[in-house]
Image: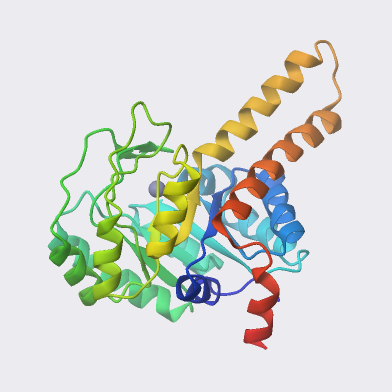
Length: 291
Ligand SMILES: [Zn+2]
């Protein structure tokens, strides 16, 4: 039991109200490190890639890397494409074998977003994949997608109608979080998660989690945020560990030692969040229920 549809991981997490980390990887080293963390904790894991990473590595090489690494770990894992406004890249990734995609049409008006998301859901369905939807853009630019302008938050009824009309599998509601590091204390609207889940019991997705407290994570997960995205924390662990190693070892030119140091830092970051979200030890129960 290794690569599974994302619904096999999130249906259970949503029903039992624990969170599954969805970690944005940037290369083979970070991919292997986060999978090793999940294996160590016996936890299901979602690995995700930004469109920027897919463009940099190529969908073909990336999916080959993913399959080779994922099949080597004994826990259920799924591959998701994060914020993608470009339909052509959505198609490329679905064709290649991504299990889930976030079609980010939050820059369009809700009507056009709905119309196109319906098409993406049909396309994903033919591939046995799932779609995450959003109508309000998450504040902040992430890997070239998004805006630093705060977007309007629609009434709950608008989110409700969007979920109903599109048939998306998961939804990323606007709850006051932002991508990147918080410049000031975020004003969270956790009750929006509860209100949407009461109308449509589907997994909610938490974006912009880096910098939230453990209490804030736990509260949002208990309300239905079953998928918790981790992107900025990986970038920090990845870049800062390179910096630390280089500063501690001037004049040393030993790539394997440096990469081992970076891998350990990325793995510990993943262990920290997977443990905090409550999915440790859940891989085995998932395998039992699926067999
Ligand atoms: Zn996001």
